[in-house]
Amino acid sequence: MVDTNPQKIDEILNRGTIVEILPSKDEFRNKLLSGQKLRFYIGFDATSPTLHLSHAKNIMLMEKFRQLGHEVIILFGDFTARIGDPTGESSTRRQLSKKDVDENVKSWKKLIKPLIKFSGVSNPAKIKYNSKWLAKLSFEEIIQLASHLTAPRIFERDMFQKRLKEGKTIYLNEFLYPLMQGYDSVSMDVDVEVCGTDQIFNALTGRELLQKLKNKDKFVVAVTLMENPKTGELMSKSKGTGVFLDAKPSEMFGQIMAQPDEMIEILLANNTYLSLEEIKTIMMGSPRDAKARLSFEIVKMFHGKALAQKAEQEFDRVHKSGELPEDMPVFQTDKKEYFSLDLLCDTKLAPSKNEAKRLIEAGAVSIRRMNQEVRIMNWRESIKIEDNMVIKVGNRKFVKIKIK
Image (cartoon, rainbow, N blue to C red; front, side, top):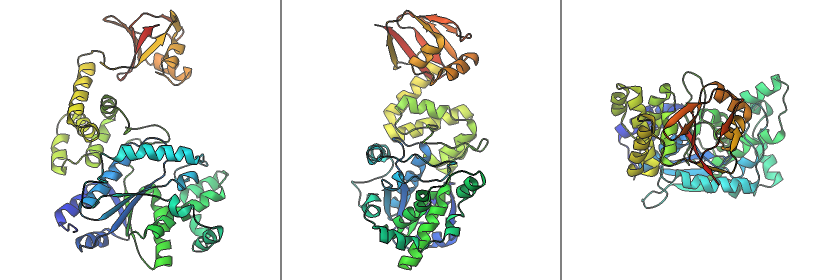
């Protein structure tokens, strides 16, 4: 049975996660109020082994539609991931092997389990893979599909226009990507596609194919990418930036606390189930307290209340009281002395010597022996190694040195 409670529907539509609905918000709202059970889907190309909070908010939105009684499909683009979506890219994406994609999908299924019900409920969400239909298409069928789209239509994509102006290469497989993603809608016979604003073109391609092949319309529900309102920066699974779902409780808590203040309300609205009224009250307090509440709510969702409380206590112990973390990486060595840049690189506290140099010059690196902490300011100096000494970078990275 479909829940048509207008208050629940309006809370979903007006929370800020959804930024555009095509053909219109009013039509979509009326459809939700009609009591008709709709088939929703959202697709993810498994291009990396992990996901971040911007992906999580999409799954949480799908769970809300599932709770209303609608059919929800999480589609893993195990075939399209091997084509390479050009969205947001100034150059061609690296094509992945089937093995890479399969491993990524396996990881993602575990990561989203806390966010949506796949079992134990009367209307469980479903997982599908687009290789099931795309891999079976013959060349003749692909040509027939392609006949429904025009070259000028494909060239409308802004990233293609940008690459052409910059004289950069566009490969034919990238032109085929919207066609393949669009065919997902046809194969699953969906009523609604949820997508990021960067995927509207692909979603509309699916709408066009549905109209031509099945004489059916679908709604396109575009969601925020959760850009930083000051910098425009996005969380990125391919670039490794953001708050990641595979992080341990204390690590996740710290990653959220490290988010800029302007992201607090955005994350509260998109990545928690707190009411908008409660979020408004939280935002009236200090940014630090608001961020701590945000961190607790998100860690609780993925790891449970007990581990969220422990992560908060650990964060306060380290960052308020200046104590060392109870659980920190250990680096074993038999060397008695290290060049400072080599030490940071070998302990994985810096990805390169250039970054290690930058961190030292910024005053972000210190050495703690017993209860004394000394900041390293000269990147040329050598560091004498002692058992149980701790290297600290910034406020969140620690490594304990153990002598073999």
